[in-house]
Length: 228
Length: 93
Picture 1 (tube, rainbow over the protein chains, first blue to last red):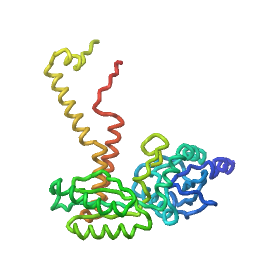
Picture 2: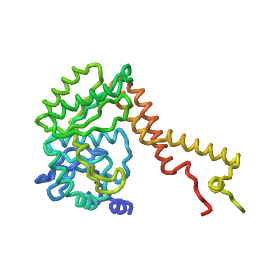
Picture 3: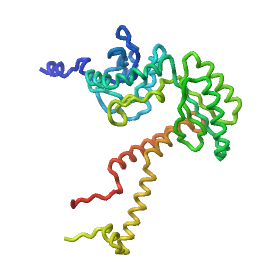
Picture 4: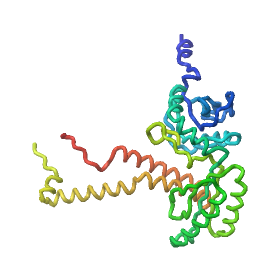
């Protein structure tokens, strides 16, 4: 009797919740990226027309910002990025079933097709220029000059860029650059030269990341409910 | 029972010292809450803390402690925003 109840409650993979890490171009067959997902579940592709969401099976729940869980999401995307151009998906995108995921894919299909062209063979690289404590009173004119010098040099070796929020008074520059995979070395060389030139400043060079700041697709309402 | 709303009195130009004091204290309290529990400001502090750790200005222990305090503050701030503390509720309709 107990076993019958347990069997009845056992969910089929179709009805399990799906957590979406990113979307990649459609592959001819289902691809597995190993057991890298939440609760060490398998990360694999589903197919929707010419796109393939990369998912793992999950019990549906709300995904609050948690450093360890964000790290799981990041590691999966990092793995997928090694072989594919990815359309990034915001952390916390879980669907109650495969059917609901397909509905969301259908709603965002056109926007995702456009995004696919933007991210094709490209990655995002981040640059933050931070003032050491003894220089935090630097004038806004000098800050502006440093920032525009960085931008001028790095724009020349990138396809696009975005200035991001200066979330600290000590931040002089916080920008994301969309760079062709073939130009990464070139971009890194430029960053190296700038670091030498401004060696008294703290420069953080990060990436390659999926193009989070160059793809902004919102399908469903709510802060954590939409591709971006 | 008859209730006199302080805003009604204020709009009529009537000032009662006791009510005025309560109103002032309410405004200060509301302003302090908004300043202290500002989710955007706290999110910026979380990002800044991470950056300070990545640049080596904070060690792991300092980072974890500060981050945990800020995450707790953010959680509180979001609850405060949801509850909209500080706004008056008209329970009489």
